[in-house]
Length: 83
Image (cartoon, rainbow, N blue to C red):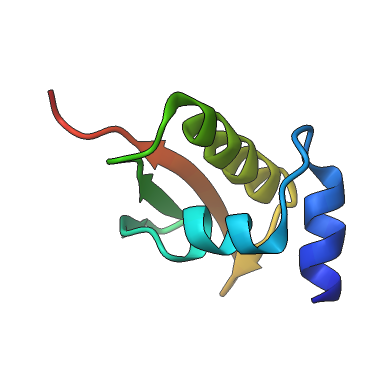
């Protein structure tokens, strides 16, 4: 919960923990791992433009934190549905 509150405080748009959980942690996506990085692409299907912006802010903030897994940087981005 400490991580969640610190993370939410860094976002430009203020959102609650419930909203964060529903638009970030409960979304489908794709994970691509290369030799140097791990990229998570979050599916934006069904999100309003407002929540796409919020999710984009979350993804940017997580990437900016410089989190690593097994020595590989983690990047988070949005994956738009095909048109």
